[in-house]
Image (tube, rainbow, N blue to C red; front, side, top):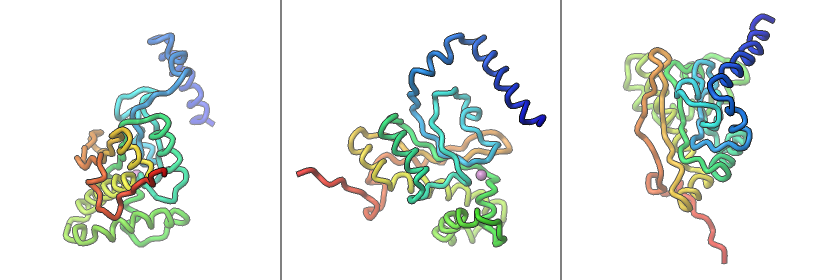
Length: 214
Ligand code: CO
């Protein structure tokens, strides 16, 4: 019970410290949330979106799953994406992976891990797309790190392929979709500079055109 109780005690201390700094903190937040960023990150406990970006409650709308995947049939992800983009009108969608990701590592191997293997299959599909590039990398650690980066890049594409995003690009030129990788070793984020904000950045087959109302 020690850890469990420490969480509640931690919450009470956090409220006290927060109110000491700003007595209106909760009053201001309770009225509405206006985050400008949707974060799609890994569930890994070492990669908390707010802490590593020094942001506050209210700043980032967050979706996390194993290995920061964007799977087209994932209703959870699609609901978060639709709500944050169409209702909250976020301006940036950040897919943030991390080096040392256990999900990506497991997807590189052949061992069984239970139910999660069905989720990891999506990561293996990414490996297949980039297998030529990855298998040219002799050093296993370097290959692992590149795979983490390529997986993020592929998820940036997956976000961009949705009609949710493409309709917003047409209507308001936002959001911009970004790919980042966080280092567990240094705490630093690497911007992969693969931002997409335009249908022209996608292969024609993935450009989605809204039917015009007659
Ligand atoms: Co991870």
